[in-house]
Image: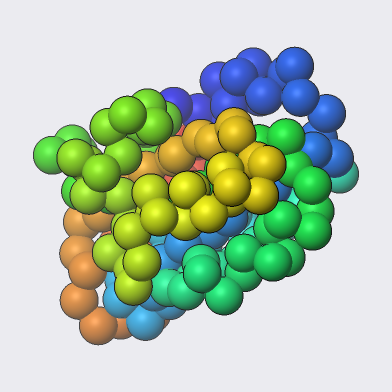
Length: 153
């Protein structure tokens, strides 16, 4: 997946109705890739009007904020081990989220989704980034950096 493909999928939705949620641990090398991709979209001023939530490892702490933004779609971005090349970015169908191991964080992402559905939000997208290394460290590995850079080309 690249940014143009993402834009195409989101084209029927006003940017002001999009909430992107970055997940990951900024102290665990490639586990922070979802946070970095979210940050890059913001820095490059893409999806103007969209809202961005850097939830890190605690998306449950941001549920009220997400609901208060009245989104038409919530897009979760996280590191996901998918048996692909490190740095590969993939749109994961909602039906495959649990089987792909989306989110290594304290609550199941499907539990988060269920809560948001109960609050009237019914449209979700999951973007996974294949990690290389997940050890202690503040820097992404080169393949994941390159994967994020190529997402915008």
